[in-house]
Image 1 (cartoon, helix red, strand yellow):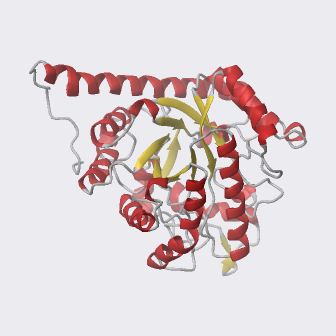
Image 2 (tube, rainbow, N blue to C red):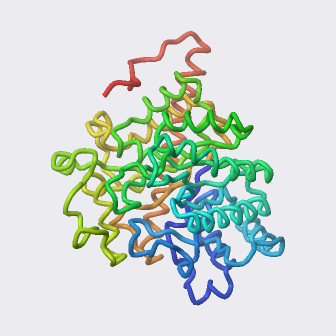
Length: 403
């Protein structure tokens, strides 16, 4: 598969005083850095500029990066400049990524986010990129069933605009439990295969089913007690194994002690995001809403978590080799044109020092590439080479729906 990296791995690779007056410098620098890291592609992170966002950076568990700065329209001239850098370093763009709540309950805030997503569509089209990646989100004032109606009314038109530009919208499935200070855990309705299928059926009714795909991230499955092989098997059993169109390779390591204290719903009281009986007025306190997640789990940069077969069988860490085997065995994929995007959110290593971070990211990308190659070799031996000679495959292997 094609190995890449999300440019949010280093939010300020180009200093703000340099990039703000010359926004495409940030992309040029990241393209050069991707080649230095050994990546084939970048997933180009877009976000509202820090002066325009409705969520202060101090309230975010994982700060976003506006590597693609869209305060001004991304026009043909800007696209030529970026393509020149891509060609010079032989690096591609897998998707433009804009991760925000497209179903925000406030009409003005929602409109601002939709307008920005349309600008991301325009930039992707000008760059010759065939997909964008983001969330669906949730209207926190509505039930989940009511959100399906909201999705049909307000999100489907975005998909129609994506179709008109030749784009596919790939949804990352993070449930985003800390997105609000309320007690709702699922703040992105496209968080699991059951809802992917429900949403896709809506899309099909409006002729945009082929524009709605999933950018699967196993860290979120682990967070919800799922294992990749069973999840892929479920999609295949239901006839929807075509839905996954790309991957974030980011892990999750479950804390047995955290689960013992709080369960998989995370910390529900005394988090620190509420003060005096209401949500705190200090944005920095709002990051405590993420204790719904972080008391029981910590993100893994691929290769940084210890090899732990018991954790794999308990669905408490990602078994990367079986992840890549299961993708080949159970999904409907064009493997050679499928993107594996390293997403760096491992908290102790979220450092902004390039010299320190470079060997970490380089080694993680190399790990992902070698794991994928090993899975490809195993798949060829077991599914093609041995059967062609009538030789049986040994053993049983990990089975879906079993831990």
